[in-house]
Amino acid sequence: MVYVRDDGVFDASIEKIWKYLQDPESHQHETILSQKVLEQKGNTMKIRAEIAGPQGKAEEIWQMRMDPPFGFELQVLEGPSKGSKQTHTYVPMADKTKVIVVGDFHRQGASDEDVRKGTLAYFEQVFSEDNAALKDF
Image (cartoon, rainbow, N blue to C red):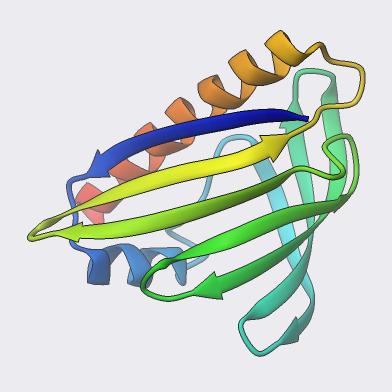
């Protein structure tokens, strides 16, 4: 497992971010090819996701616990990143919102350095995608 921490500031209020997160047609990422909620109990969902990763397409099962408006936790239960856990925390800053992401990450067959670099590159990509989508949301 590799510990990774990253942060950024969205050009959107925390209220706008939560509306966006709950709108699957608007909240999409290039690397997440499809998602299906398999089970939902309260604020916790089990999701089957088809992802595009360094080794090509793969399927993962995620457990996601939403804690609006403070953030969410995501744990990978099955797939190439099995065992990875991450927490996203949102901090309101007037009309902007800081996001802090921390977690322990694993990628089957990858070195610790490749996991660290890949995770940070992924966060940079999805942050850019979200920030761009939020401008039009």
